[in-house]
Image 1 (cartoon, rainbow, N blue to C red):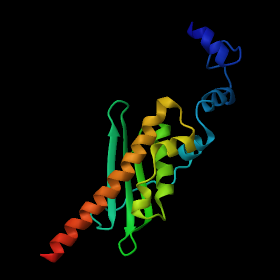
Image 2: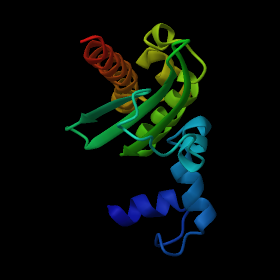
Image 3: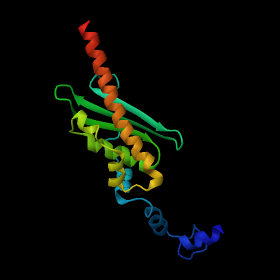
Image 4: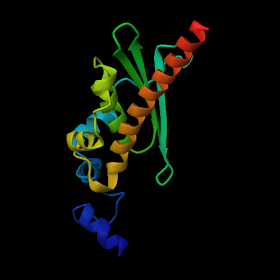
Length: 164
């Protein structure tokens, strides 16, 4: 049975080893949209900020079912409330990495209230994620919300301690 499937995938060659890398590559690429492949191969804004900086909000979310973990950080201009930069680190599949990368691009330059309106369905639609990968876009939305919440709570505690 496996040999028959391998034969179909490789265009009639007897084994997977005999198949050309180009044939194997074309088979793998069919499953992901080119935007996912682009963000996976060329992720934007990878890295992290100093978590102790008061202008930074950190969102750390995970999906135990699939093992994806996403950390998204935002750097906020405290005077304007605008997100001036964003970084991410993601342990997970290509769709999770692509969702994180796209989320960092979308939040940069926007007001904090504005990024809270970014929905997982918009991320999934932009990346053309299949239904089985929708949890990746949900993680990205949750990470954005968690980063904003973290920033706001850190700022409130800093302002509270400064007033006392």
